[in-house]
Length: 223
Image 1: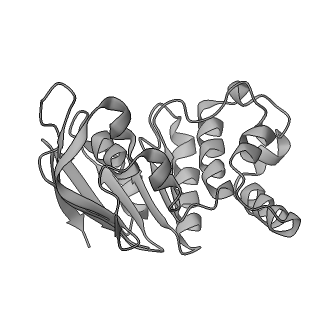
Image 2: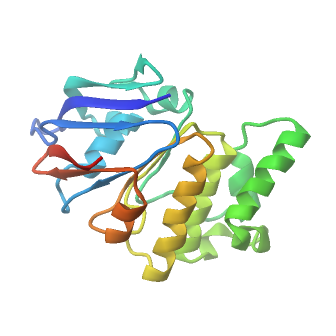
């Protein structure tokens, strides 16, 4: 169930080469952070791993991406999602005109009543405020609460790999710690967690391993 990104190079729609040589690995039970300055290639990397480069008419032109032992390089987003990969993008991460409860139901992949009850309990234990606001429109939640709802949706769809772009961007510092702790909780269930965060020392502390991307090239920071 490991995610392996191996020496990928990405060409954008306009012909420019963005990511030059990025490699990373995320194993079950691990939290891995991808950091680096704005415009370095972090978002391009995670969009390559989730298939969303296709919507931008961009593609991986060398190297490869594999999950759970199977290559997923340049597959469509729905094909990658069907393999148990969930992606929380920087923007447009929830349905603002739906209630919190409906946002969760849209992502449900566990049909039995007993399993659904169990997964709701998992979600509400991690995000008590979502239980309190189940009938509230998601668009009325704060930025931090919307991020929590987006992460909860990935739990609802029973993802084996969770990838989050810019996990703390624009959020109050008081939210950062709880979000990082939730990453550890999800990983402790045997899942893979990869998130992008520009430069938070807190993120580096919670991660099992860290990679930095600069100028489209990655290097590992810590073991």
